[in-house]
Amino acid sequence: MPGVAAMATAALTIAGLIQAAAGWLAVRRFRAAKTLAGPRPAITVLKPLYGDEPLLEEALATFCIQSYPSFQVVFGVQSSSDPAIAIVERLRARFPAIDMTMVVDPTKCCANGKVANLINMYPYARHDVLVVSDSDMHVPPDYLACVADALSVPGTGLVTTLYTGRPTLKPARPGTTKGRPALAGLLGSAYITQNFAAGALMARALGRQDCMGATMALTRDTLRRAGGFHALAPYVADDAMLGRKIRGLGLRVGLARCVPATTVAERSISALFRHELRWARTIRAVAPFGFAVCIIQFPAFWALATLLLTGFAAWAAALWCISIALRGTFGLSIERDMGSIRTPFWLPAVRDVLSMAVVLAAYLGDEVAWRGHVLKVADDTHFSAARVQFAPRRG
Image 1 (cartoon, rainbow, N blue to C red):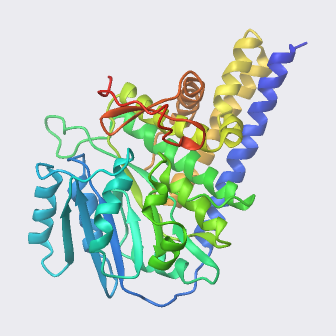
Image 2 (image 1 turned 120 degrees about the vertical axis):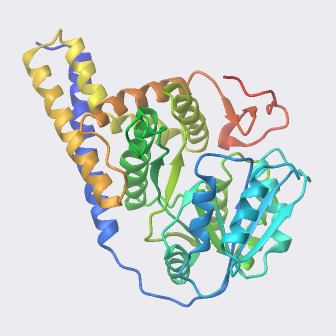
């Protein structure tokens, strides 16, 4: 008879496979749903920047080819020597018809560099609808239209988006013209698309209305009622806190139907692990219960644990094979429906093991490596004056 531990891991395997199937169905429903077209108010896009990064110009350029009648793009940096300035100047030359504003302001009113940048940029926004978007977002041409449609739904105070992963390419090998994604990039993309995006949809089905920092769209009046960008200054997870403040006003957080992609720049497993550990510790502080139960998302890990605990029993081996097959099938189906890069069939099983390692490491400390500093976060990722520490980035 299998032991209690093996039965528990087998149960987690089955639960995880059910969750994977539910995630795929949630994605299919999301992609099939339609949003009615709404008004097209003028929009200001706020793009806080910090240095150069892989695919930055390509990502920013997608905001310059929007099929939208009237919009402004405000870029912001906090140093006149920031290399992102040169990229913006190249975009000006490529897209002279686009209304672009470059804000260079070293004022840093808070520990959260992104929020400090947004505070500096805000006075230069000319329109009443604001769209805050991360620098590494690649968006489709109808992105602003989709956001405007979602924001026009009655009772909506804030709009956010899901996103998929877009790994960078390794240099092309001799005799070839195109590079290939590194394994780390594929693993990062798989987690974002298969776990994060699908999990966010299931959370919404259960009543959660989380805000993802990839897109935060709202009106000036709603932002003012929520306390402005200054109200987000004490927090690392400014997106999660903005969502809470909007819901506190009795408004909902809507989800636009378009799906941008975020650059997955890591080319080594260690770099990817450090990046995902920052995410994990931030999420653990914002939503500790939700983070704890996320372990159900990794059925291939639990199937492997069952196999080891039973000494490679035949039934456990069969469960392991089934878990790999179903995890791969559901994962690749989600990638197809989300329009993401396709990863190898076997990769979700490897991804589950890496994800569990990240979860375990998240409980071993409270440091967050972020933008050249190491920060200590308290509950709700608040920058408590007694706990925040700045130090050179390690590793």
